[in-house]
Length: 148
Image 1 (cartoon, helix red, strand yellow):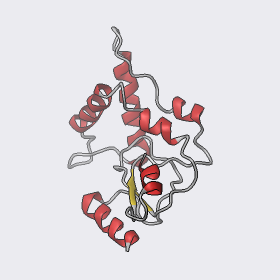
Image 2 (image 1 turned 120 degrees about the horizontal axis):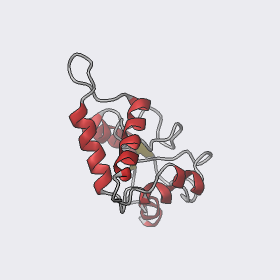
Image 3 (image 1 turned 90 degrees about the horizontal axis):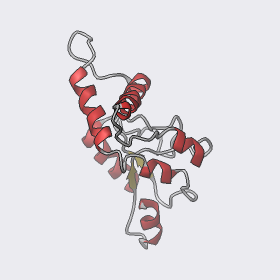
Image 4 (image 1 turned 180 degrees about the vertical axis):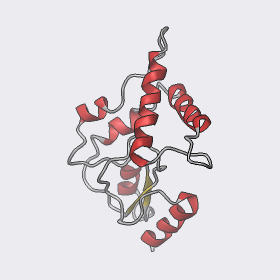
């Protein structure tokens, strides 16, 4: 949606901060569905296990949150799992729609993913050096840099 707005914005959009940027060479619609399993609540609670595995897998790729002393921050992981499970109706929509992203965006893109995002692709269409890992201040600085 943001790319469409940028295309229709008559130059008013100078840069985009986008989350969950897919690698268009790798992400197909079937791959997007495979990476976003069904989280519809069920009576046995297996949707919670699927949500936990998504959070865990994302953390294994980027680093799990830790407490001082190197122990995993279980409260943080628990919170992320519940947030994901609560959004079962919509959590996958943007990622799945990104698989059908038509062409290159007309303006520079800064990746706005949190470092633990399980959907961040290995190769993104973001301005090099702006990978979303520096927090809000870094994101705002990156947008200023690319927008001129």
